Length: 325
Image (spheres, rainbow, N blue to C red):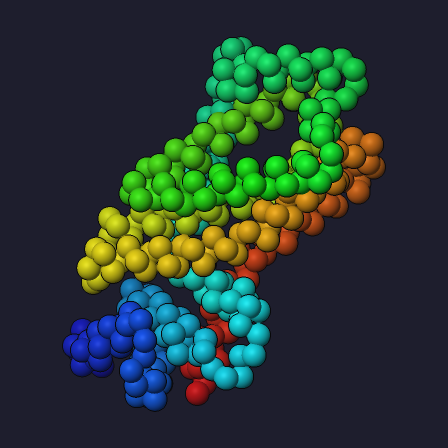
C-alpha cells in the first residue's frame, strides 16, 4: 500500500486518538485501549514499509503519549513517585528531546562567547565577575587557596543558601519561557558567558586544575540541571508560539503542565549539587586529584544518563513491548 493511501485510510482514527489523549480525563478507557492496539499495529506497519517517513516519527510520538495517558494509572503501579521519575518524566524528555539539544547549543555558544571575549578583552572578566570577586580571588591565589571564596560560611548555611539560589535560577529560566523562550535564552546566555569568562580567568592565573577540583565537584550537576531547566523554558515558549492542532491556550496549559513535571525531576539533582558544594567542594583542593575527578565524572555521568540516555531506553522499551501485543 502506498503511504498516501495508508495515511488517508487511517488519518481520522489517528486524529480521534490524538484528541482523546489531549483530554484531561479518559471517558472510555477500554475503548481507548482498543484504539491504542490499532495504533501500535499502524506504527509497526509504518516502521516496516515507510522507515524514513515522518509518519513513523508522528506515530511513535503518539504511541509514547498514549502510553503515559493509559497506563500511568494502572493498579499494578503501586509506587506512583517511582513511576513518575522512572517512566513519566523520561518519556516527556524523549518527546521534547530537541529542546534539550537547543538548550545545550545555546549554552555552549554562550560559554564560547564568554571564553573568547575574556581572551581578547582584558577588562571582560572584571565586567562579568565584578572587581570585588576578581580582587579577592587574586589575593586567594597568592595565598595558595584559589577557591577560598567558596569555603566561607558553615556547611549547612552554604548548602541551604546555594540550593535556594540554584532553584531560583532554574525556575527563572522556566518561567521566562512565557516570553516565547527569549527570556530563557537570555538566562542561558548570561550563565554561559559567566562560566566561560570564569574558567578562563582561573586558567590565565595558572590554577585551572585547582579551580576544577574546587568548583566542578558540585558544578557538574548544577550546570547540567540549569541547561535542562533552560530546555523546559524553551518548551514553554514553543507551546505558545507553535500550538499545532491545539488552541494556543490548551497548548500553553500542556506546555506548562509537562514543563513543571520535568522541572520537578531536576530538583533532586539541584539539591544534590547544593549538598556537594556545602559539604564536599570546600575540601576539593586538599583532595587527591583522582578522587575529585571520580566525583566530577561520576555526578556528570548520573545526571547525563538520566536526562540524555535513559529516556531513549524507556521510549524504545515502551514501543517494542507494545508492538508485540
